[in-house]
Image 1 (tube, each protein chain N blue to C red):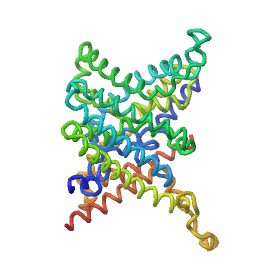
Image 2 (image 1 turned 90 degrees about the horizontal axis):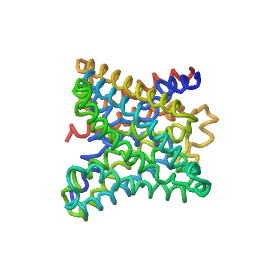
Image 3 (image 1 turned 90 degrees about the vertical axis):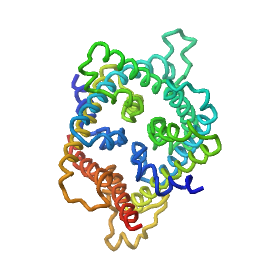
Image 4 (image 1 turned 120 degrees about the horizontal axis):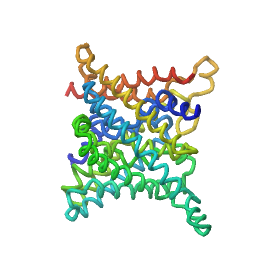
Length: 198
Length: 203
């Protein structure tokens, strides 16, 4: 059990292994797209892991990268079409970043490191856990960026109007893309302090 | 002509792959420890982008877009294959990288030695697939537009990773708080560089 919980803290894919940063940061200006992105990556990661694990004994090692890419892109196309059908606005907001899940290093990394050498059931759990570890960071970053940048959460205003009358201003800097990087840097810092105390 | 030049400048400085869209961050953070390897990887990315984006542009325009097949006859005008674009793009990229590796090894051994192990790794670099996807979204009118976009994004990526590697070489001698060393400070510096690049927005 402990092995599977690793991605949530000790082995977090973004904070510790610096994988999958590419698509993680661009979608975190607001909470809603971040949650959708986190769910999509969890689904793709879990099911690609499951399928690769099911056929792991029949893949010739020389062409395994192409097989993996094809299976991952199958799931990504499925997720992309579902998002376009049921959440059209969010899918417009995420634009190319849904497609970029294919080259998300977390998924390729888990396929290589775990699914190729484990049974289907543990692979599925491992995929879900890594997706959640990734999603956790996304949601934390998006929470602070939306709260401080636009004064809203999930598109509802949370900072009372009285604050604005008293002279409170939204921090426009938080909306800019580079702030996502700085926030993740600070998260790594906090994590580093916590780990060195242990 | 000036439009093509504009696209080039825009994709190097304003829509920089790393600072504006965070594409290719994984290899950007992992390989930016020395200027030499960083510029090698940057060159390879530039090279692969310049080839795959125009190829994907042609495939998208003449095979995949809604109505793209109309050159086959009017009965094909309704066909919309755009749902295949993700799979086709990644297959083209993986195939092209493999092909390039063989061609370079055969005809340009010096360049092959310089790029080394980076070429095969590029197939899973988000900047490459991202280049093709943005190309599709921007809907360029001709191939030369997409080519100048590809070269520009590649150069922008090269610029970003080389600058980062140069800064990180200096960082070895600075006194950074213990828990922030390594990746933490790398993220924060990238963020600050991104804020600096925002100054180009006015051009």
